[in-house]
Amino acid sequence: MRIKDYIEMFENLLVTEEGLSPELEISQALQGSPKTPMLFEWNGKKILGNLWADRGRIACALGVEKKDVGRALLDAVENPEPFEIIDKGIFTEKLGSIDEIPILRFFVEDAGRYVTSGIVSAEYEGMNNISYHRMLVRDEHLVARLVEGRHTDRMYREALKNGEELKIAIIIGAPLEVMIAGATSIEYGKSELEIASALHKKVHGIPLKVVYIEGIPVPAESEYVIVGRITERVEDEGPFVDITGTLDHVRKQPVIEMDEIYSAPDPIYHTILPGSYEHFLMMGLPREATIYREVSKIADIADLTLTPGGCSWLHGVISIRKSSEDDGKKVIEAAFRGHGSMKRLIVVDDDIDIHNPEDVEWALATRFQAKRDMIVMHERGSSLDPSIYDDGKMDKWGLDATKPLGKEGFDRLIGR
Image (tube, rainbow, N blue to C red; front, side, top):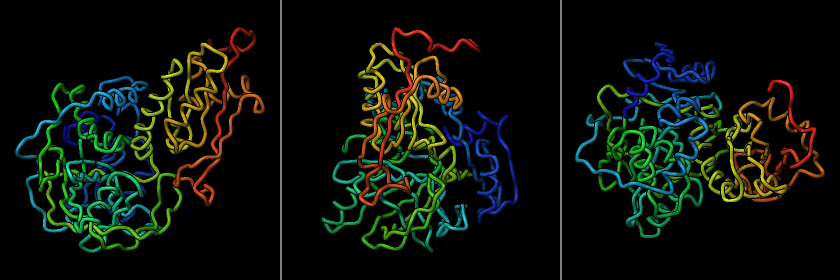
């Protein structure tokens, strides 16, 4: 599906604004209505934000219940489907400059305009990878934040060793299935596009259609495509207001030289507001799938979520159907294996609504004692947490707020 098709799906929720500038003003409007999909028109260009800022909209577009989004992704990861290669995509119009794309500057503190929804597709030595990388616009080139050790960075380092630049395609305005697959972490050599194709086939009954450009696979229904090379040159990237709403520091990062820029007819530029619900869900949902995979090996899961208060990255809650007394603690250990960047996890029984913070707090108030029910670990954590120790480790804590088996007095009798 094209972005315009998703807009039609949720048009009763959509707010349209005209005349706001991509220089801070659109960002301010998105922040003011953080869960509302908003379509902006500026100088003849269309810009969309907050589209996937609600779990219910994602579930609707995938044809599943809200609680089953992570499971649907996990099923696609475990059962990938080949994509269909076609000759031509919808992005047939050639642009003369990056300035023809209405890229936003989000915050005064940012180093400049940033592409935040760009998915980089790279293929090297027979391996393909698609993944998100924020990109700072600098004159006629981009500076990409490549997270060290990730697959794109690995391909890039291999290319440099061989005296080459890494050829890439930057995809902006991709189908939802591609957006979610692009945020997954899988074994090197496996294809995220085949995960996207499995999701696409489940939803639409047909595999994902893909076009090859300069040897790089690109989803056919992409609004903008930038073909280029990650070079050996580096420049300052940052500062940038990241997912936690705090300022990420300046680093030396690789320069992307752009060779060709394409757009679909009447393109819609989909942007992701940093530190927003859309940012949370696009990053967090794939980790919910990996948590589910590990926890389901040892417990019966009722529901799980990475909470927006923890940026859908650092804090999680899981409800289980408890069958043995140590299930809660086993779940804690398994969940941290499933998502190594998580900082805090609460485990509750299946009578607790994990999407209601008051329900979760009630379980802590009536079923939890810190000395008995808390596990603390000191392990490597997420660099997105500004409070992390200098050695890259963090204190992770799991809270078992499940009621003891076979004991009375723990059931909530009000509001049954």
